[in-house]
Amino acid sequence: MEIFQKLSFLIENISLLADWRYIVMWVIGGVLIYLAIKHEMEPTLLLPLGFGTILANIPLSGAIGEHGPLQTLFNAGISNELFPLILFIGIGAMIDFGPLLSNPKLMIFGAAAQFGIFFTFCVASMFFEDFDAASIGIIGAADGPTAIVVSQKLNSNFTGAIMVAAYSYMALVPIIQPPVIKLLTTKKERLIRMPYSPKSVSKLTKILFPIVITVIAGIVAPESVALIGFLMFGNLIRECGVLNSLSDTAQNVLANLITIFLGLTIACQMQAEKFLKLETLLILGLGLFAFIFDTAFGVVFAKFINLFLKKGSKINPMIGAAGISAFPMSGRVVHKMGLEEDPQNFLLMHSIGVNVSGQIASVIAGGLILNFFMK
Amino acid sequence: MFQNFNPLNFIQNLDILAVGMLSIFLVIGVVIIVTVLLNKIFKDKK
Image 1 (cartoon, rainbow over the protein chains, first blue to last red):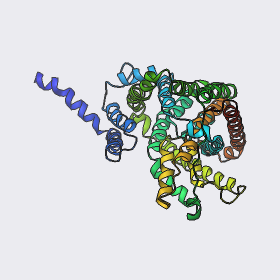
Image 2: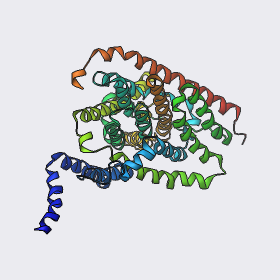
Image 3: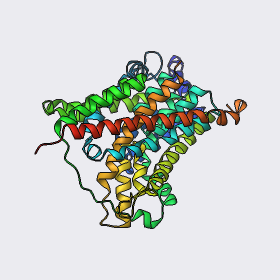
Image 4: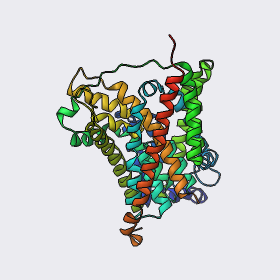
């Protein structure tokens, strides 16, 4: 009889599974793992996120809670924005600003493609408080670290759903962008060729660029100076030419390590009781809306610019869509679409140039949002 | 959430959209000018 009493805790734990929400969260975790492995969608993020979701949704899970390791990691690296900022060093070290520096005019498309952030904010403000709406709008930055930093600094009530939406949609860029681009362009426009004639960029320019951008962005939006500063510090390590070993570490070991922690830690925000709400569905919908409008405005803006360009020097409007950050997926999507229309149309260098400008513009947009709403 | 649904907020916040986009174009405009200047001043001599 005593044995049965001691075994009763097993039955108690199993009975907790009667709460269907745990099962739903396991399924969500399973889908994320499936997408990561089967479709290779951002596997470095979706796999830890998927597994972490299951880990956080075991009834009475010891992984979460006040002293659980996931909560400890969250407190150590997300609530103070440390992990996303460190990840930015790695991202900065991965980015080659060469194509952008050789054709700086492309940066204008990075600015245009931030439209979705502000437009989504307006739409979200019909349902949420302004600071939550602004945090939801920043999903359109298509940049996980920026989304985390902004939502944390604004003390959003929906940080978990915002992080999940930001990272999931980044993985889904190859699915989201092509139909929007096709809808807004004609076949003739998609066939426009853009010859690539790179101008040489001096080493000194490549070294000064990250420093100057940090100063400009820091003056305009001081709240975002850590974001842009860490990104540009990573790039400076890459371009200075004397820290190849550090650059290699930042691009690989550091970025991978932080990515593992980030994915697992974000998952601790995906506890059933916090995540399975109507608001979460609405946030996921608004995040998709932001990505679509970023893409659409980038393309429309490129078409607008074409009105003023002579025949023969027109821009392929598809490259406007690459301004949504999501580096380098968005640049590759545009390049691939160009090749599908014409196997001799190589848009990669232009689209990657626009893509890295989107990375800079999205961080500046994050800083502006913080300036508007951090009071 | 839906109890607080207020379509007027959309109209009221359009000024944030305008100011935000204008600011971002201005900042990126400055960045473009600075980059062009950097390219001109520190031209590769090879």
